[in-house]
Length: 304
Ligand code: ATP
Ligand code: MG
Image (tube, rainbow, N blue to C red):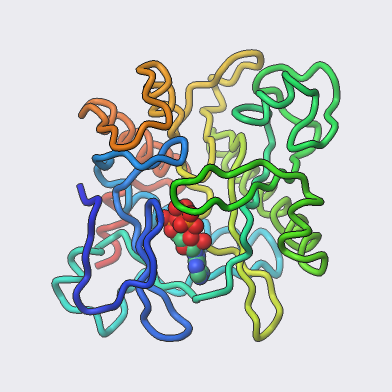
């Protein structure tokens, strides 16, 4: 399990909660996903075995299938191959968990799309009858499907801060009117295509968070970051779905529930017990297998 990876042959540009970004050249990044896991915006002290490879291989799968289903969709994905200049030792450290991507200007919002009402959206609805300030139909129950998927952006908080739910109007002020509606439209199209794809494989994508970047040369909006992973999404097994209660899930809900139960929510430096880390790992890999039809080991093996 690797929560801290230091490469010697490329320079680190930035570190997020889960990923480390290295600069290959002006236009290219090496996007390395560690085994770190965050819940409620706090990073756990230990990692989840094989998580980095699972997220990288799953994102790569979506970067292949989504452009086939959403005409005109551009993504930042270049290749799963390591850059030529990487030392052999570094290649070994990032094996399975890295991809080369186009370096782009990031729109500073979290582009959340929700197909079902749960989490912070459910809490807001119970209190005010709205979701991210948007009026909602009466009578929704916990985990109800929305009549239509909705775009519910949030701010992109600095490390250590918490993201805040905002209305589409507030998001438009942040990204600019010329991009706001294009981002919303693209996010809804990608969500719908992905939800259909996952639905055929027994997984409900309750909600998900995208990030978009701008190709300043062409003025095109590009899908970046990780996509449609158990970290960025709530995946529910379709055959167990029942409205009116919490859903058992593939994703971090398991870890989140444990933190809540133990009263450790928002606490820094918490270490997960081995059984929580292991069962989280198994859930991530189960989602991978259902969505891609391959085991993680098969996907990594195929890299050569
Ligand atoms: P942040 O660091 O923004 O708070 P995070 O903790 O989720 O978010 P990670 O997911 O660990 O961060 O790291 C990924 C970082 O890389 C994010 O800041 C994301 O915005 C950025 N990023 C993703 N794709 C690109 C890209 N193509 N070009 C530049 N930056 C990117
Ligand atoms: Mg992230």
